[in-house]
Amino acid sequence: EGPLDCIRKVIADEGLGSMYTGVALKVCETYMWNSTFYAFFSFLKPHIKNHLSGPFSDVAHGMIAGIGTQLVLFPLVGINTALITKRQLRVDGNDKSSGSSSVFQWVREYTNVTRAIYREGGGISAFWKGISAGLMLTINPGILTLIRKQLTRMVSEYRGRGTTAVDDFWIGFSSKLMASTITYPLVVARSQIVTSRGSMPHSGVGIRAILRGICMVFETIQRVINDHGGVQGLYAGVAPHLCQAALKEAIANTIRRRLSLILFAYYSYRHSGVATSMS
Image 1 (tube, one colour):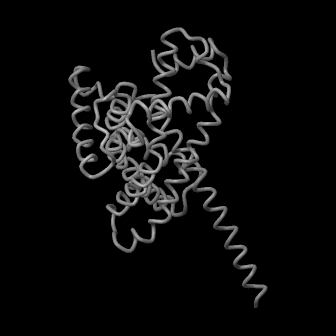
Image 2 (image 1 turned 45 degrees about the horizontal axis):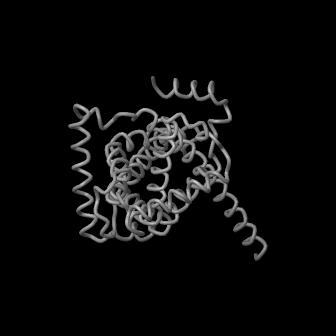
Image 3 (image 1 turned 90 degrees about the horizontal axis):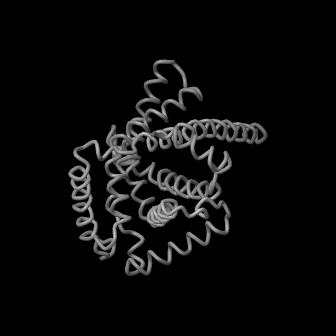
């Protein structure tokens, strides 16, 4: 009956602690995605500025950084999706062991799922199954970067000074909400492709394979529309996805901006101190 009802039932059945099952591994995964993305983002920044300008540069900057991140870390998408599917099957089968929070069990399950993907998918290329949808999803950080920069500029001009922590929170929330709403059908297509069996040829990640994959993304979207009676089928489950994504980006944007200001002030202070001592 909705995400709030789901939360109430989980807490009632398994306790409040169950809401944080597997949080350590999730934190590690989030760190890997964010650190990799911003490593590409920072590396590309001077190159983007030298060759592009205007709003398109913001979209291209986010998209290229996202492409690099997807190529490096996309195997995690397949492993996590397969793991979630496996657990859902156990829950549907009333397997009580599905709620265990043992770190060792998580590691064992990840290992088993990784081996299964490798064996059943026909080799290492199986971990990049659905990469075309992942690459298409890089438009999300592109749109996000554009909207976030525009909103930050507008708020700064309106206030006549820099943004506050509250401003940064709502800028992050709003920009991610809009970007994820636009790209959610691609999320659905990616999940459908990753969890499908034998429907996608594993011919590597070359240009031809990616182009075939892009065609398959649109075919998957069309199939979802046909099977669920219209475009609304593409947005089934969108509410919890948007809440999680927007809230995460809001918190991340607030912390990122505050830390940037603190580090900038710290290094400015150190630089001025060194300059004073030298004089």
